[in-house]
Length: 314
Image (cartoon, rainbow, N blue to C red):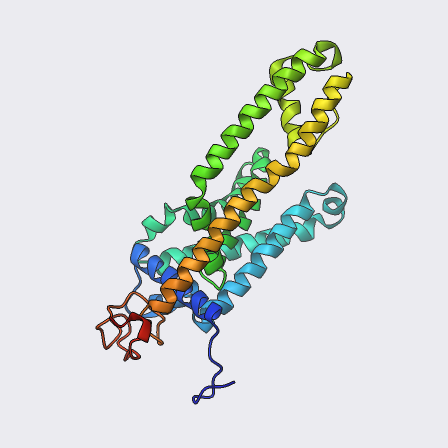
């Protein structure tokens, strides 16, 4: 169903994603500074404001370039492919290196505080994505550093953080932060169980069956508890096999506990957000929801606010 303006109204999830992307862009602007006018302001809007059409197009093209460049790095590590298409892969690698270099310089150029961005986490990642290729050219013996180019994948997180996935990204981060104490206590308990059972296996099996020390036995206990089981060490006695069977069954439950803790926290986060949204004073223009109840106009964009919802009227 379309509204009177001829546009389809946004769903609640789309509104939340749009608001989260807007807030993320505001955070970048506050931290690094946005030029007020001129070509730098236009360049800033394309690179950092993902809620605009130009910004979304830039993000999509950048994602495609990152994925293709990482594919080139992966293919270059395969001897058969590198021997046959080495020159083509090297040409592509230099193309993307120059492209990312221009993009990195453009990011610095359109910010009021470029040094602050260059020293940030994603600024360092951007630099590490291009430097290894130049180092490999100047120092042929440092070709191992070229593998650092795989860090280009980390740049995807910044793009996703400024687009429609920021709502889920934020919710997952808050759930992990809220459940960190529970997870830490649970992991501490698991480590104690693994250490105790590893020590028991060292006593039961002994060096003659491959359990040459307590650290080796604890290593076996970890691989067994996580249901990995490399097979390099295996119990030979009946008691040892019984303990191993118990640990394998226990491992299934252990893997499920952190998932349940995080899922519970995410459910609580979603319920809390829905409660706040139902009682919040929201601007339909910029989707800001931190507005006073007695406000008549949005303090962010200046649009007129809708009437108060009945549930927030005292």
